[in-house]
Amino acid sequence: MTKQTIETTCCVVGGGPAGVMLGYLLARAGVEVTVLEKHKDFFRDFRGDTVHPSTLELFYELGILDDFLKVPHQELTGTGGVFGDFAFRAADFSSLPTHCKFVALMPQWDLLDFLSGKAKAFPSFTLRMQNEAVGLIEEGGAVRGVVSKTPDGDVEIRADLVVGCDGRHSLTRHAARFEVLESGVPIDVLWFRIGRQGNDPENLFGNINYGSAIILIPRGDYFQAAMVIRKGSFEQIQQNGIEAFREDIRRIAPFLGHRVDELQDWDQIKLLSVQINRLRQWYRAGLLCIGDAAHAMSPVGGVGINLAIQDAVATANLLAEPLREGLLSEELLARIQDRREFPTRVTQFLQVQAHKGLQTIFRNPGPAVAPWQMRAVLSIPGIQKVTARVIGVGVLPEHIKGAQTEKKCPVPLLKRIAIGAGLVAAGVVIGAKIIKAQRRRQYAWGESRAGF
Ligand SMILES: Cc1cc2nc3c(=O)[nH]c(=O)nc-3n(C[C@H](O)[C@H](O)[C@H](O)COP(=O)(O)OP(=O)(O)OC[C@H]3O[C@@H](n4cnc5c(N)ncnc54)[C@H](O)[C@@H]3O)c2cc1C
Image 1 (tube, rainbow, N blue to C red):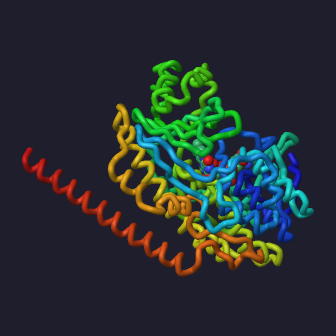
Image 2: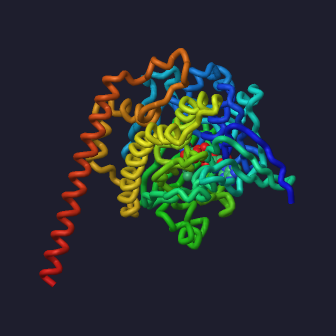
Image 3: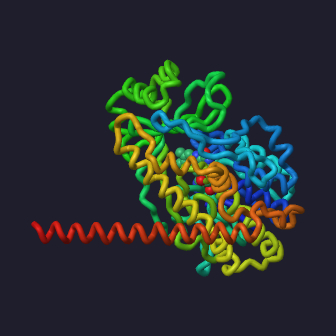
């Protein structure tokens, strides 16, 4: 059967935050780009909703911030929670060095509709919905395009570069036989909605108690709730029955009261499997992976979308010109990994540490008591601003090439060096502690064996 063949300069697989942003930026720079999205629309409920200050800063640099802020959204000026009976404020975005001193909460389908709408203004942009990449076209050891399954049959899309932005279950990274380095993850997330009332918290709110945690994301008249559970324990939770599940929620977040009765059926509750991993190498001739396809992120900190968008900006900054001029090389693809791997590794390291904290919560099924270390850290003056910086801006934020504000980096060079040195020092201290603990464990094991 003859397949239809389409030629383009860059074929982006996946219309998530990384793919749509990359498509927009390349088209804006005059590169012929085709974005493939397997679904027929962007409407899916299992995605994050957070648009961070550093992403909003990019929209400012692109001149689309005012339009973006016209799309219905909520502005999160901080995050906080209750640990047992200890109420705390975790992050305060109000003094970030960005134009928007808040995280915008917007359903992801609205963000993607907005960005793809902006991209469509450029004639070199094509978005092909219901196009599922099912294989790579490889010739002479290089990737030359993808085969896409569509309602009208298979289509061959030939391109100078394929960029895999197809998320955690990426076909492109699998087909390219890229090696995936997994970080063990002890948690999964249950995702459901629950009604919201006038006097409920305005900001994102975590409730930690009775061996579990529920994060409540305000979305107008309801909360998008994310309940953190031990990996693989959903079956047991279901076996205990929906009433026991409702009771658990009521105990963890008592202020929800009778609203938990809205949960009548397991169909209302989705299991989202959490992963943290990254590719050893993100590229090969003719192919690059970015976003979750290169590094699947945990929902902790709600930073995955931001990181995916930062990857897209770095990719467009480095590749738009070579793509336009036909001067693409593998060395250029390597530079994208060089640039983006450090922020990815730092962010994943912090997420893994947060998972360890969650494991200690699971170990105590009774009323939670905030550890003194947590109380002490949260009482350090200005600590909420530091966490806001880590969450809201992240490590090594990107800027749009050629934007007026390009040089006005939110973090001055000296400060960046200081932050980098601080992180390295922290890494050395933590590493030394881990090695010491392991040695102690080995020693104790040796002693007990000797005793036995
Ligand atoms: C439970 C949970 C909650 C989260 N909450 C947040 C949050 O609040 N904030 C945050 O910043 N991050 C959050 N994250 C992380 C965040 O969702 C990801 O890091 C982010 O979406 C990555 O963007 P992406 O564009 O790389 O991939 P994705 O968002 O996964 O997009 C990939 C796209 O590719 C499409 N696709 C897949 N395969 C193909 C194919 N073969 N052909 C064509 N199209 C294909 C998919 O349909 C999808 O549209 C959460 C993650 C989880 C698991």
